Image 1 (tube, rainbow, N blue to C red):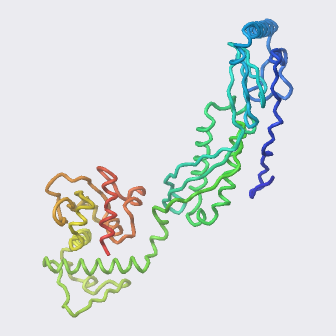
Image 2 (image 1 turned 180 degrees about the horizontal axis):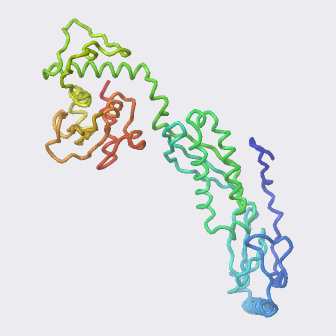
Image 3 (image 1 turned 120 degrees about the vertical axis):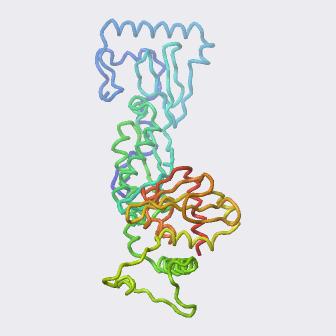
Length: 399
């Protein structure tokens, strides 16, 4: 049966290819002086010497005689029933035997130990994890994996914890595959990527007697858009920047720093050519107010008691200016309607946030999310990260 990727799966339900159970107790002597034909891998028995072979047979005979002398009481412990969908791996005096079952299996007391192996198809999910794609996008991706055991001997002998090893292999293969692909390719070609993961995982797990039948990717959420998409501002981001500029200009005029135009005058700004007041040659420009101060001051009209009750935290912003100096601002959302201003807060802040002035502008204009800024290293946090994520409520208030 060929899959979408051309992978030929083992036949399902072919349980009769394993040797059936046997009541004989000398069957374990097979291969004492030479390995069993076709025995390869970690479960292959090495040749034994005559003394070891003799002791092995003597102990097996004594165990069988003890079983007969204590029968039928010992029958309750020595006879095991194996269903069709299981196989029993028996170790006699530490040496593995052929898979036993289905049906009734006889175990010799004190010298046999066993382990059951389920041959039915099982499934597990790779928990959603945060990954960065090739184009810089941050997304939460998980996967659903279906597998089955095709060789019970290898599943017991080749790996100690089969489930944990398979989960780790699937997680590592998914991470490596998604790191070298852009976000758009991940979203469009999920089926193709799943088929490639199927082949990569089977290359590892077939040596463990396990075969993966199906891998399905599940993209939970895109936490941060690709970096190249941030260079092309959308209409909404342009309007938000214009609103923040006009609002910042009105606040600056209120504190007497920058003269504001008349009430019926609309100032047009050319984004290609600088204003004449800034391009004047031979005149020394006056002291400029930092952009960060204007942006944070523009938050004051949006603060409310509802926002304070929702956030209930005090933030300190250490903003790195383009000149390399650091300016400190605070946003107190613990009492009243909240306050924002320059300098350190009155009390001890809950969180100290350090970021560049350009990143603060992108954050307040909703081009950058707090989680995406933190994961990309553009936002450094000293304190509880969950409190920083509450800044989403502040950004939603900027309508």
